[in-house]
Length: 157
Image (cartoon, rainbow, N blue to C red; front, side):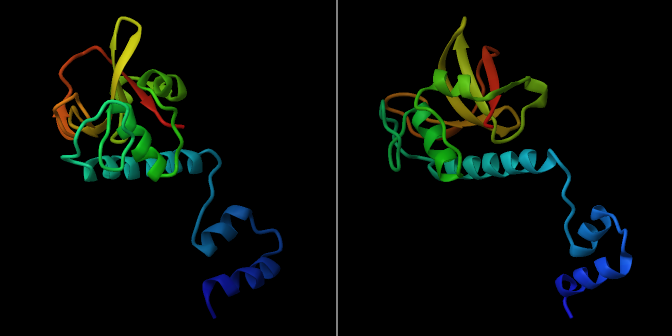
């Protein structure tokens, strides 16, 4: 008899067993609020891997993949393949994310480069102060160290 088949008989015998006990016997525990954070982390991890897989793809202004990208095209493409929808431009993407501090950033979060209040570039945080991004005309998708302190961070919801 599998664990799944035993759960109903355990519920009958237990009578007043808590949902947490039954869930634990079944092999999974559901905690409100945790599932959405875990799903966001999964999407971010997938998006990061997808962006990294595009290493060497040429930059092209306005391109959204699958073989050429601009900065926001790479983030849009990566998150779309990971199951999350983002708007087209870096500024629109910034407005759609949950803004976070540098100290709470995680791999897969978006890094927005700004001048004053204007966002002009975006990449995907890879950890250790580096991002995957499509830099500029004549360049290719690559991993690069963040070169300025004029950045904001956003987590895709």
